[in-house]
Length: 164
Length: 178
Image (cartoon, rainbow over all chains, first blue to last red; front, side, top):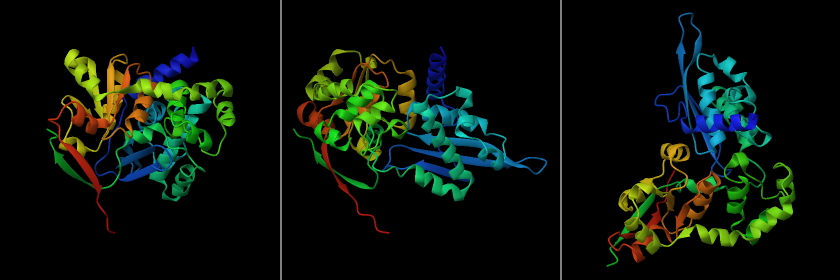
């Protein structure tokens, strides 16, 4: 029963994700993954200062072509960190960031870690080493989702004209 | 896995369609690990059964292609609301030429497709010359889309064989200078 409930929660969160999309004029941005190692997750953060002078996260958004679970975790995590100071947000583990979805199965724990590392990359520049480490797996096979991303770079298109 | 993928080019697609492995980095695998290791860390799959399915991957791939003329006929025979055409190319290529009613795949559209589109309706993946669409189709199939196809030869073959009004094109990568 737990698995069914978890699956439903992930499907629902991924079908109607919160906070998806690039943020204009963000105060911080973090990226994990690379095109050479499967998918990529990018997080944008905007801060605000409260009346008591505390600097907290006002809003966070994300972009990902990752699997549905990664999107679901990013969706709930970006809601969870609202109103938290950078230190409070950084103290959250992948497990805590994905908690609203329930306990993830072992094969999907990496999805929560991906979000945790993106958050770390955005809030703590020193953590860049962590995300590089995570994206430099020994010899990763290219993944099917790589084929969903158009080729990077600039291209010139030469129209050959109608074949009639 | 390196040797396995070299011997069975469709193995990656079969692994995702059947077992949800290798779709993205979350469920990806390493070229240096063995099939046995992958099976063990993926909930104890039977490597012999997995290998048997991989050996038939070519037939599975063949079923996923749709020929340009067959698609052209379908677009005239069935209600267009029951066909989804997803274009995997760059925005520039799409703007230069695209099939009527096709949609450029964006992250937002991807989410809409995964979350809301009926999974039994015909979904056709289109690229330039059929290099990427089969992998993309397998990705959707692994997410439960039962009637997903890849356009054989891409929009280039469609233009050549099914609809001559669509111009063909070539792409040149522009050099970038730092």
